[in-house]
Amino acid sequence: MGADGAGMEGSVSDVLVCDLAYKGQLDELKARVLEDKSLATKTDQDKRTALHWACSAGHTDIVDFLLGLGVPVNDKDDADWTPLHIAASAGRDDIVKALIGKGAQVNAVNQNGCSPLHYAASKNRQEIAVMLLSNGANPDATDSLHSTPLHRAAAKGNLRMIQILLKYHASTNIQDSEGNTPLHLACDEERVDEAKLLVEHGASIYIENKEDKTPLQVAKAGFGAVLRRLAEGIKIPTTLEKC
Image (cartoon, one colour):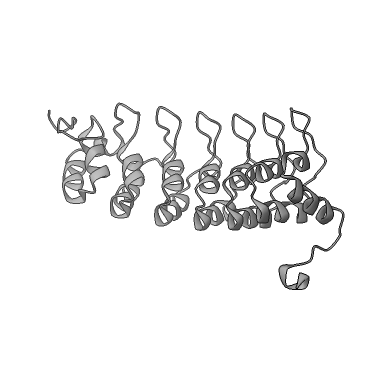
């Protein structure tokens, strides 16, 4: 193939500059793009550009080069992922910062209705979550299953992420498509500290999901009692206080 096509074994893309971006081959990519600027925004079989692929692989130098050329930062691939979705999901802190600095939309959603913050919360990308939230990301964004980033963090047991989301005023009582709140999910997965933190920040122990179960009914028996006492404002002795 010519300058457009990859045509090489083990390539991720049918567009050569996209493949070069993924493999981190800055010098060759730069030479080809400077020869033909249109290649900087050329899309491949997945509707991805070189910027998408550089974000995926974490090649900050290539991202900086492309952003310096003024390439669009909010283009979506065939699943509506923006470069920011990809960088947030992959944990590319420096790239997320650079994309936001160039105007990346922090509340863009993909085909699943997920924002970049959903992926940061799921994968416990704490610094990225703070960057997104401090630049206007909606902590209560709901995906196609009505799940928020707090649902994701609670289900995964990402305590520090829950703390970050609560600091940015995430709602504790939004119900997903199954009627579950983040507290339901924390209880179901036996995330003890996470569940306690949610209750301390106003999560209701009385909301029923579509199976007519409250978080207490989802929780294991002993833990449910602990949550009830916490919700009712009774101090729970620590291990040291019990001794």
